[in-house]
Image 1 (spheres, helix red, strand yellow):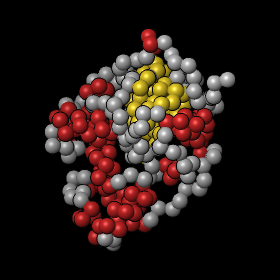
Image 2 (cartoon, rainbow, N blue to C red):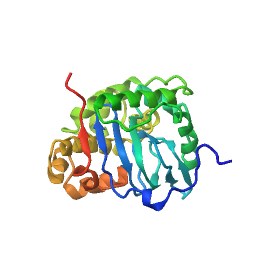
Image 3 (tube, rainbow, N blue to C red):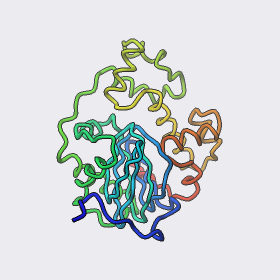
Image 4 (cartoon, one colour):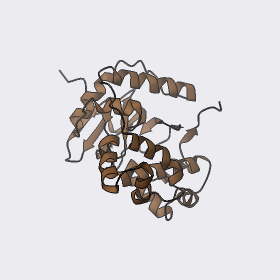
Length: 270
């Protein structure tokens, strides 16, 4: 009998080649709903929660091991690639530094593809039967996915006060001086101590995390209709080539592959 996190390969005709879905773009989480296309190897400072409503997807880890599954959870700072996509998928990015992200770290999900599929088994009964169209639906599905995952998670470890303060300073620091040498005195720690503490508590090194924040800002600009060059400059990248390189290393695809084709959905005004 085939294990729950593995299945037979889908017909080639059902494998999408483009990202043509919706991006629900919030302040604390990001969800993509629609066709999942293959990607280059990449890593990001978030938990990636994947659920396919139809055929399985195939993921590959950094040592070329693969898993075929309908649900998976990839931990932060772990290289992975989508080898085979699916037509109806939900892809949720959860910040590792948030309360939920810190709880998910207690699951101890390993860096190999089979472990991602096993972690995804918890999502099989989450009750999601169709892709979200409106923000409220995406929000409800986010809560359903996270509740299913947290059922086996432990208590979130506390965050060091200096790291908490640093995370609060970061949005404004992107427009000023984002070097640890400039920020460490503001939180009362040495550069070396803060760098080590940040990686240990957030689960991702400092510099790639700053790039992630810049990509988030660039995505906001793209959602508002900016060109790649305009978005790059607004987010602190040298030019569109610099943005393209960082985007591909983080998401496994270029911004042009989604900027002009996906539908961006923002949260309603409160």
